[in-house]
Amino acid sequence: MFKILRISLTAALLLGLACLTVWATLALWYRLPFGLPLRLVMSGGFALLGLAVSAALFTPRRLRALATFCLALASVTFWWSTLTPPAVANWAPDVARQVTGQINGDTLILTDLRNFDWSTTTQATEHWQTRSYDLSQLQGVDLFMSYWAGPEMAHMIVSFTFANAAPIAWSVEVRRQIGGGFSPLADLFKSNTLVIIAADERDVIGTRSNIRGEDVQLYRINTPPAKARALLLQYVEAANALAARPQWYNSLTTNCTTVVMSMIRTLVDEMPLDWRVLANGYLPGYAYDRGVLASQLPLAELRAQSHIAGRATDFGLNPGFSAAIRSGVPSPLN
Image (cartoon, rainbow, N blue to C red):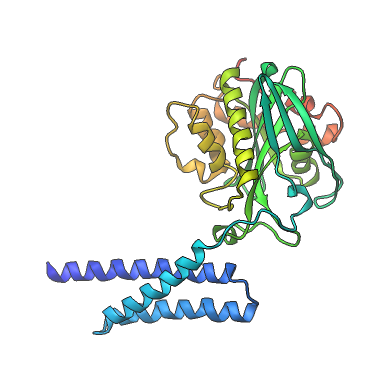
């Protein structure tokens, strides 16, 4: 029994050392503000330390080795805690501004709403606008899923429709700097900050369907106007908070899906955790199971009718884009 316990403890220590070594090595590699040679030396040095300590577990020097590792890890952890997201940087043009909102009774005023005219995936005529919305005219909520990496992963955009105004599309994105980009691995290690974009659908949806050629799917959400309003105000509150205090983007914990799901959880009675929140390409199936989509249709048929990229490209990025892409999309009220 003692032998089994000792083997189990050693295995647990080895696993813990491996995980901590990988984390610290990648943190040093991605975030040290030095050139390639010095980053390679320091991150590689920590990796070698982890290997040496793992080997030392089988020698009489195990306690001294573990103490050395803990001291090194504490140093990395302290340095890591000092990294703060920048408020000002050389941002890429499409994420250069953080939308903010002001609410006066039933009037919502959004400042720095994006309405770019895209000509290529990287070039656009910039338009940052201030728009006012009558919240009493809010009609509903729509979910866009833009598939850019196969069926497992998609970018999630939530859009709010009004009886007397164009929809507002909200997109949680990586706030890249000029010359930077999105990397699922690097963005686990404080490489980019978070931005919440409010935009015209011709911009944030059209650039994906018409310019990038992504498979964009549209799902109408079954929710009463009161809950739609509450969710919209959650977006406004989150955007204002982000403008006041920047936040790191994280590929797993703080991304386009998890940020929205955290808002939704404040509005519904029950929102159980599900693997489809991480593999968010399957999120429509999760929403369907929760009864918030057009459940009068089988899921396969609903998904087949949700593709809007063909209609979007046929219509073009012209006035009336939002109405055109909704033509033929099932409503949960039908």
